[in-house]
Amino acid sequence: MNIFVGNLPFTASESDLRGIFAEYGEIESVAIITDRDTGRSRGFGFVELSADARSQHAIRDLDGMDLDGRNIKVNEAKPRS
Image (cartoon, rainbow, N blue to C red; front, side, top):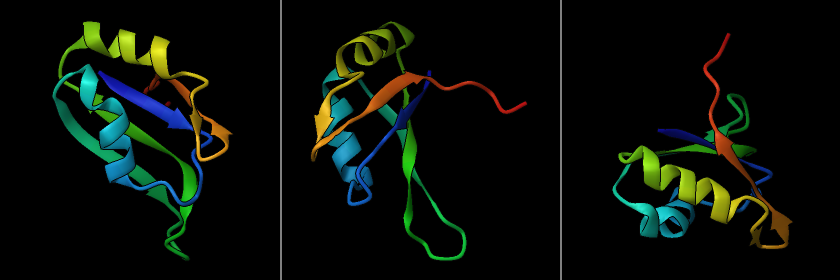
């Protein structure tokens, strides 16, 4: 399952996200989206976990978690329309 992680601090790294989601199973991929021109974080990213059931636990447990003073938003990623 692909999980959207929003309201990230601009200093958050992919390794930070790996650390947060590690207890919820095997991480297939992590990506923090950056601005094409500046390379600066846009404040959101995606984590893909291999087990959907564990993904639901991650969403439930981590939504609203404080990360460097920001309450992150965690939910199932919606396909682009």
